[in-house]
Image (tube, rainbow, N blue to C red):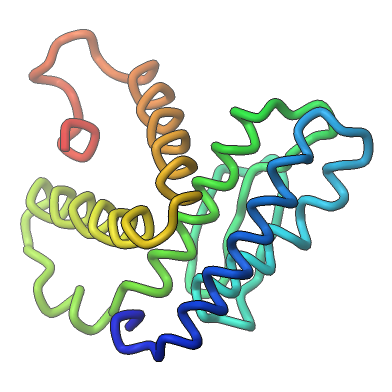
Length: 171
């Protein structure tokens, strides 16, 4: 969907993301910064996803993307730069999935088997994240932070033997 966008729209998206990046970068450890974080993050997500009606919720729930609704971890006033990068990486990942993913094409090619489907989903997620990381420098820094956090959390839940690891984690 993004490949067919006119150049002026891409420049607009890049400008909003750059301004959001500059604003969010200065929030780490600053008093009252959590109140500023949500509207800036929401605007950046809506712009990247090209979805003005996107609902962005920050809270203590697990991160999730369902239709045009997202749940992102809440950032506190004492959040470190790494915690902000993880939250921004999750939001970038969700926004890129919305802008670069087609449900009809995805369902047409989705394999039947459980493991094959898990690999297919992991590759699709990597594809949409790679498109954003290639196009925008800030995403190239945030997405790896979120990915590392996701893998560290999954590693804690894994079995010690390699044969018992779930396929999406391995991919």
